[in-house]
Length: 250
Image 1 (cartoon, rainbow, N blue to C red):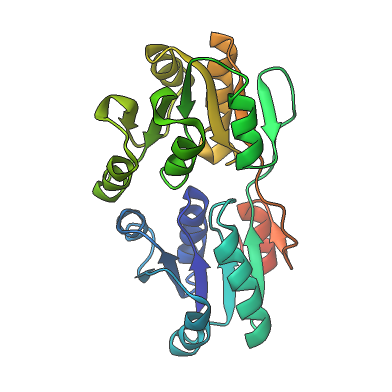
Image 2: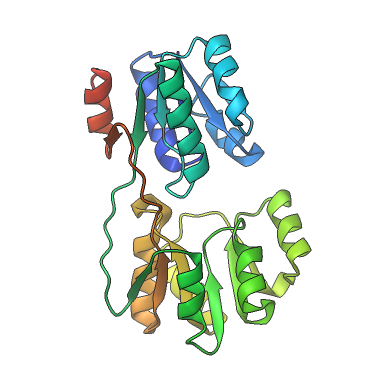
């Protein structure tokens, strides 16, 4: 049985590959929203936040013989835990990583972390369009103040509760599910008179290219937080490469 650590669109593509090849697997996600999406791609879905002590019994109960880590590029904690757990159990681990396609230029301001992103924002005056997700919205609010932020998040009850608790008003929130076209991004950024957009280096599937194109059209910078750098034991960046690793056809 393969354990597929998911929560991304790439993990669903990996699930489809495993299904086509009749490889038994369980798709692990952390949210109800993720579980709903996963159920249309996987026969076996596990919704839980795996803690360090959970891996060994999970491996044993599910008879796990391979782990495929297709979590978000910024989900560094779960990746670190999975690498350690598979090493301890002697189970092969492979990372499915989104390709890095960005370069630093006038529109794309690449920064290493949250602190550096805030430093860039402080150089600007006006509304900042935050598209880094709900998990970091309260951190940005604490560092930069609520008044100048407008956020885009998934339209779920959990997310809206979190933003309300952080102090965001309804007029500061775009609760929408992607994908987002360049034209829609332009409209959303223009509507709030954004002077900059903050995003994460989430790859092509994360809609970064459309955000960049919109920012270029509007003449505003897109501040992009680089993904954490990790030394993965084994890494692939395409379904074809993963199929080769698993010794199956695409």
